[in-house]
Image 1 (tube, rainbow, N blue to C red):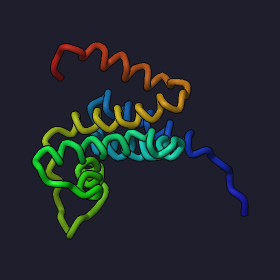
Image 2 (image 1 turned 180 degrees about the vertical axis):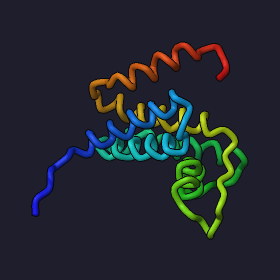
Image 3 (image 1 turned 90 degrees about the vertical axis):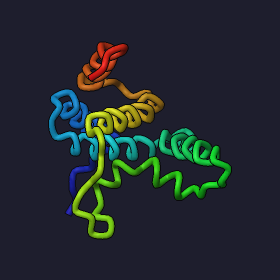
Image 4 (image 1 turned 45 degrees about the horizontal axis):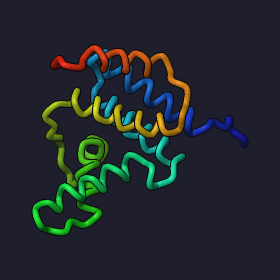
Length: 144
């Protein structure tokens, strides 16, 4: 049986648009985090590894961690960078709760991370992305 072939970039765009809609409506924020993190990974897979936001983020985190004098492992830096998205996706050691201070902040963070890879791919912006950018421009200098 042959199924319909769908570009993973199209799936990533759908994830990102849904994530933005949830964020702007201030609902389903954990869905927003999950979807934008998945979009970031899919967009990133279309870029060379050294250009992906996830690679740049864990290298920056590793540098930050090394300021204490210790030499951190790559895995520790990656774990730190991926903490929010992995906390909501996985049952680690049977934990039934997630500790997250501000789901809205986390959702915005992951949308912004996905957009970094999106912009590097030079893809056409959707109406959801335009609305998110307008929202962010209106928020500059104010608190949410």
